[in-house]
Image 1 (cartoon, rainbow, N blue to C red):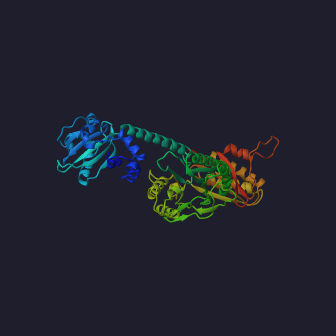
Image 2: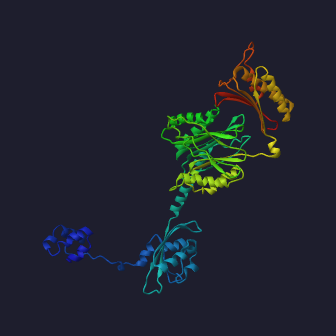
Image 3: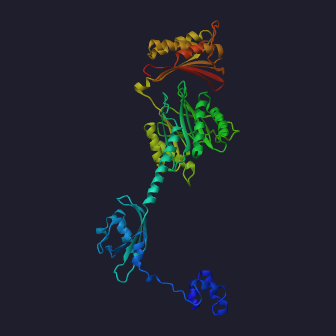
Amino acid sequence: MNFTRWSARLPGTQRRAARGTEGSVPAARGEYAQQLEHLAGHAGEPLDVPALEDFSVRELLGRLPGLVALAYGPEHRIAYVNDAYAAAFGPRPAGVPVADSCPEAEELGLLPLMDQVLRSGKPRTVKSRRTQDGGSYTVTCLPVDSAHVEGGGVLVHAADVTDHAEAAERLRASERRHRETAVTLQRSLLPQDLEQPDDLRIAATYQPGGTDAAVGGDWYDVITLGAGRTALVIGDVMGRGVRAAAVMGQLRTAVRAYARLDLPPHEVLQLLDGLAAEIDASQIATCVYAIHDPNEGKLVYASAGHLPILVRDEDGTVRRAEDPTGPPLGTGGWLHTSGSIALPPGSTAVLYTDGLVERRREDIDEGVAALARALSGASGTPQVVCDRLLRSLGVTAEHDDDVAVLVVQHPSRKGADAELFHNAALELLGGVEAAPRARAFASGVLSSWRFPVELRDLGVLATSELVANSLQHGTPPMRLRLRRTDRRLIIEVTDGDDHLPRRRRAESEDEAGRGISIIATIASSWGSRRTPGGGKAVWCEFALPDH
């Protein structure tokens, strides 16, 4: 037995061990000799392993389930196609260039690939190329050298991956449906139609991030508070998934409920902070809550860990709302405070989530500065401003984070449009003379605003009841304010007492207690709120004709 030939057929570790015993026949007839005899079938008979040349390559290629074609020369003339190739695309005549006889080569983009392989001498692969008949193939081209063929050739091997491609397409379609469902869920939690206050023009944009089916926790809202005041909200629950969206939905609903109490912004965030901790203390959420009062010309806001509001003045100057900013919602133990930023006519305010300005490997302050630069040059309607900001900050459909933007414009009105907006105020001084003076003032103002007689009379009656209520239950200073917009008449009385009125049923023998009931009956809406400094405001609204 030829020991060297046998040891060459052993696995590597056994071969190395066998070499150590060469020259020692007794040792060779130990453990390793037994393994050799086992491989040979019986001792004394050499193992004759055939070489590759002993097999018919044509027969092997013909039996392969994969599609095989062999082309030669720079024109890629067909030398051979196996049975699988002929079954898939039909027989191909030998000696004819691939470009003339194999339309599938063009469909699969093989000609440029074969040229590259022939030039470089390196294999190339293209994955899941589709043909016109709907089949998909992964194709590998390998260089072939031959002493008998000048210029060499290319062996083409194609694997039919139609089933895999169709399964992958079904998976992608399923993912698209899941994403559409997730985005629909997210959008259903956002306001379907933004409320449009009389004094502001507002637009919002939500851009879901990434291509997966995970929803985010960004939200915004616009809430009319009455008496011309408007609450603006934007928030962000960190993370993605149904849990983040569920927390977001609960916080947004809570904000709307707290807003109806007409509380200052910092008190709304204080209530929201406690609720967020109860919902899920592990979820980090940020929020900005702001109130616009057309009589004051500013935004009063409070922030819980959120990015600053930006305001663009009419001349293009951009201002940033600074402190106060508290920690995110749900942390507890923090007393939020309110700040303010001017919002004069002609200005635009932008509230946004971090997806608009935050980028990897970049400080977020740089993103806010980039937003400020983009805002300084952004003009047009609020929706146009939204779109321009998204483009300027590079937010596309492939953006990896959710983005919410709320744009608020305080228009500068001129001409006929300005004639639809008026204000008038009267300080209520004195005792019993205050009520008749207030009625006379209201009658004169409403007449100058050319209201119909019926609406004028209702306005004077409402003024009388609000002033009488303030004189009886309030304390100085007292003030009457009348305001008209293009859609409503607003009557408001403020005083120095913080006890809010409530509507109650007056008994037949009662001489008082019917004022608020009368207001609730004749007006479109009414309400009250506490004012800074310990006072209160009681108001009512009347819808103007044709509105």
